Length: 328
Image (cartoon, rainbow, N blue to C red):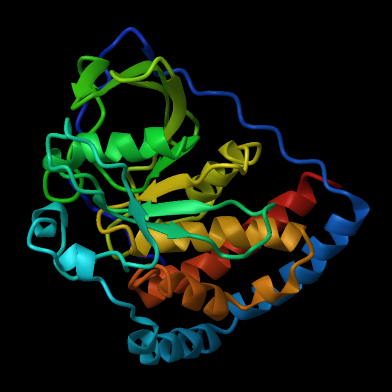
């Protein structure tokens, strides 16, 4: 497929601490597949490569998805509440009441004492061997403490950021310059930051609540070069994120966000979960339209554009090829 090229805002240099390093990290080791998994990958690769060679079929699938998007809508009364509207980055991207993430009520929150955050629980399948996610918007300055409360309360092991720090798209919710910052009652410290060979920033972050002795560790992975509403020029960096996450425990949800938390975020969750399901022998994962439909019943508009949808097919095919190549 023809990929859109990105000529975005130059990246801001904010990695000036001694805890940061420009030395590329070693690549994560490829997983060792069983003979059964090798067979599953070969079979799946034939299907996904076949779809990549039929752009009209992918377009038709996405068009049908768009035709049914209104049928998947759910109520969003809490997000529309007057007390919560200013917490939404976009007025038309709000969580459903049934799948929204609820914070514990806190009188010390800088935003308010209610439990609202613009974030949604995402579960592609009931199989506990497949990752669970929280899809959320790029935090606003006024919701930083809510964001860190969510990460801390739900013990999220990883934050995947698929955008740039930019006041219009995603405010700077990490202490990139000072390495340590208090966000409401949450103290956040970056203990290490390195860039890998795919230009992903990997940061180790410690989060502690003033009201608890528990310290929560979270890995922050930033991919700033995925254009809004578009796709990267190749699938390498996106697939590299999944490789860094391949040994992440499944007990707690992975946080994924871009700006609105639906387009790039939906595409990444589709790619990540489909690879996991294929390796488990779940052949229903071939049907990306059904996967996206499932996502859209949990958060509005997941996978926004046809290019993003086609990119999912390409990334899955490329990852299957890599898995087979590394297990020859």
